[in-house]
Image 1 (tube, rainbow, N blue to C red):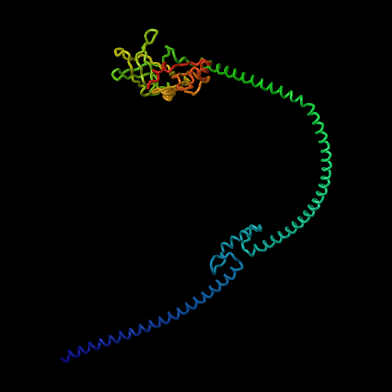
Image 2 (spheres, rainbow, N blue to C red):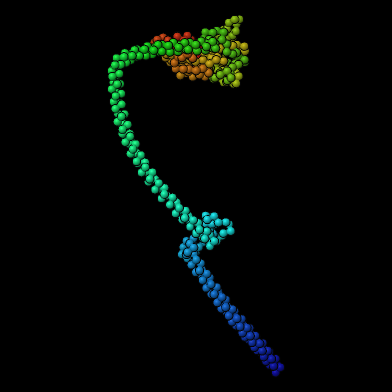
Length: 406
């Protein structure tokens, strides 16, 4: 029992010693740390002093910069702004170019003397120019006075000449008046004869122009007549032929197409050659048109046992694949063949339809007589008379109605 108590006491002493050692070690470490903190505080105070000194120097430099910026100018916007170096450098270069200094001159201090010299030279030049201007003004005043003297003398001479001119004009007017009075009767007689001669010349010129116009129209008409084939009443005029037939469909193809100015809706008479004559068999209306052929519908077949066959020929007395004609429509045209419809059909064949008869007219198509009180018969109209004068073919509508089927 006594041994155990000693062991326990021994252990407690050891723990106490360990705790004391640890306490002393902590106290020593804390002391060391306090010494390091004190050293760092001293170092921080020194750095703060250095920062304060640098700040004072910076403020002094800033104040100095502001003091320089005031006389130099070229400052930025806002309070406390100072001169902009790039702008100063640009202006120095501009001044250097202005005074003609070389690229070696780079500072304002170097440019200013040259600028002062340039200004002094300009001032001297201005003084010289002012002296020259004063001399020029004196010469101008002297010349002005001389001009006034000359002008006064000229005015006096002009007044004298005007007086002499007035006397001469008065004498001339008196002489002219006497001559006018003596020649008045002659002028009146000459004027009357001149008027009579002018009227005679005008009447002769109108008659001559009318004859020349009629002669020219006849000449043009004769030339056109030689170049064109007769359209109406020529039984031998054949335009094309049937190249294929479908009897069941009453359809056929002809050897005329777009190249020959064939248009859908045109109507051709189908004829069968018999010896030296042609026999009417049917009518063929164009449905569709290709480049060199057209599809047609067979209509009004005369003999069902004699259908249209390959080799039959076709013609349209209002159509010619090689010649274009000029038509004029005169009179009344009623449905279904109104004037507008006939014009459209003829123009689709490549022809031209005009409003009045001219030397270029080939055919005059007559419609019905006009109706109403005071209506002029077709045979008494100007267009009909001109057609007779120019020997233009006059065709009643009923003769060509079959070729204008819709």
